[in-house]
Length: 292
Image (tube, rainbow, N blue to C red):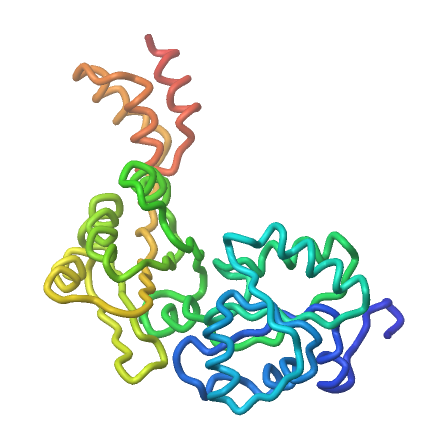
């Protein structure tokens, strides 16, 4: 521990012995299972797995031997399971959580367990590894300097449309997870919300033998997705919206006045002009109202 009170780990064993370890699993290629993850699995007292069958297959394929008790921790039992795991941690047992694939606590029940462990004052560490979201972003060829992970979109069309509409002017690259049978419909919804010419990429079977990345406009990707039967885990990356062209406040106000004179409603016009010019809708509204 240094003068600031920060604890430093001198070697891998110190990290292995942390009470709660969130351990990444491969997203396809077994070679992405790190030596550190193998070690924490060997030293665990309890392994909480999102999918116990996948875990046992992974342990067997990687030649990892462990005497840990394996328990199921998934979205349908995470409340009760997390409570039991916190009890075990407080009793001094070493718990490792492993997701079905990829980095833990990203769109999986490891998030709740992490929250509750932190709230209980239990030390938490991560044994990192492959991430489908970051892998797809890098392969997409789209801007990586600023990005946002949006996870899975709602299944209901109305809810999905509402979220996509709110993201239409996002100037960061956007990353989404999707199931193969909903990919074409989701891309179509994105084309409607973001514009058919918005650049995007669809990645599937990442790190596996049949890895594929399709790049193009959303219009082109809708046609691509509709032309084939998709399989495997899907990641969609959408490029950022173009920066709104900044015009002067006087020019923006003139646009409002012209459209209102043509019979359009002031409130709707100020909102749309604000969105396209970057000026405040409230200020445009007040200035236009002062003219009347």
